[in-house]
Each structure stands twice: as C-alpha cells, then as structure tokens.
Length: 146
Image 1: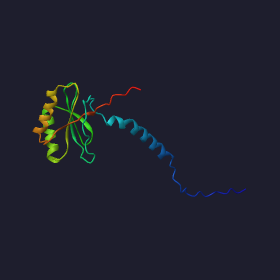
Image 2 (image 1 turned 90 degrees about the horizontal axis):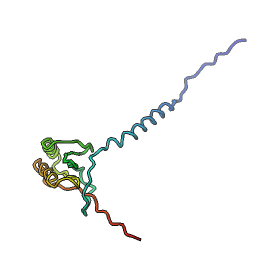
Image 3 (image 1 turned 120 degrees about the vertical axis):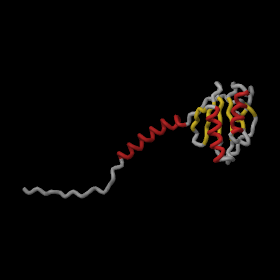
C-alpha cells in the first residue's frame, strides 16, 4: 500500500486569541491604575454661593493649602505636587510667563488659618498672577421635612 502524503497549505488565518488575552490583561491593569493617577490633596472646602467657572476656560493653575498649612501645586496634567513657598513662587512664575491668561485659583481648607490662604495668594501675585480666585463648594440646601 502506498501512502499518500497530503501537502499542507499554509494557513491564511491569524489566531487572535493571544491578542485578546493581552488586551484583557492591559484592560485590567489600566482599570486598577487609573484611579491612582488622579490623586490629590484632601481639602474640606468652605461652602459659598458662587458662580461656577466658564467651561470654555483654560485649565487653571491651582494652589492648595491643606489643613496643616502645606502648599500643593496642580497644573495641566492633574498631578498635585507638594511645594515650598520659594518653589511655588518659581514654578508659578514660570507657568504664568508661558500662559499669562490662565485662571489662577487657591483651594484653602476650611480649617486652615486665613493668613495662610492669603499668604498663598500673595505668592501667586508676586509670581505675576493678575487675578487670583478662591475655590469653594456649593452651599448644601437644608432638607425639608415631610
């Protein structure tokens, strides 16, 4: 009996199962790390009746004064960096030289001393900010009894 040898043709299909596995692993990694990238400073903002910022405005330069009086700088990439007074002055001046028309805001904790918030505002004005705004939370409406 003579054996016939089948000639194998090259397969013209791509096996995508390994690619799907890699994509699922990447998806899980990004789902876990994404919340960690948007870290910030916990600040209990005071409540006030103020108008919200215009949504078309540029992303602001934000200086945060936490409960302990520490200064933090947040700009454009949403990373919050702890800074000292001189470092805040230098970095804010550099940012304002490049983007003179960006909004400049100060977030002061409700329990921090007024002088520390004003000190941060003075540093921003020394850095060249023409106007400095304050960030607040909207006032909560008291719940009505039924």
